[in-house]
Amino acid sequence: MPSFESNKRHLRELLIYFFNLKKSAAEAHRLLVEAYGEAALSERSCRKWFQKFKNGEFDVEDKECSGRPKVYEDAELEALLNEDSCQTQKELAFTF
Image (cartoon, rainbow, N blue to C red; front, side, top):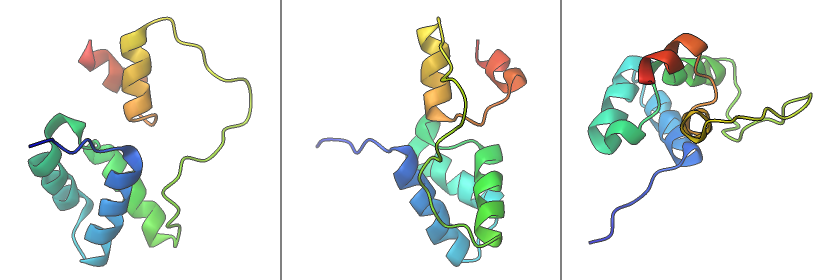
């Protein structure tokens, strides 16, 4: 049986579903981890998205950033940032 590969948009849409069910961001994160394991969004990202939903922002697409695009020399670092671009340097340091 082929396995489903989640993507950021799918996970963010699930967060809207959990938000509408009146789940907390922490509970939504726990459910994502239960279903998707390491592919789940971080709890910090879940909290960020829940705050956006509380403010009436339900667009789950990444917004265009101004300025020059970032260039990464480390493929692993780039993969981590593509997974969750809101990670801090401290969070990324713990993954290496």
